[in-house]
Length: 91
Image (cartoon, rainbow, N blue to C red; front, side):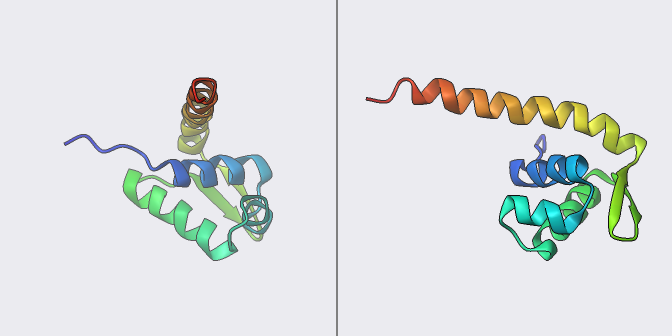
């Protein structure tokens, strides 16, 4: 069975990568800081890689994180485009 990445975890990852703060990413996503932290930890555990270097209250992407960010951006954009395309079909 091929495992796929969870879209909610990817969204938390991309948002955190863009903003650089768990607290501010949580605010933007309308989640608790703990929920964002758990999503990132779960993603890192699932992949077996550290995606962020923690620097106090801020984070920076690791090389693995930078590599995933390129794909995650494309995946989320494709998901948004699919939803928009399908919305044009509804009556």
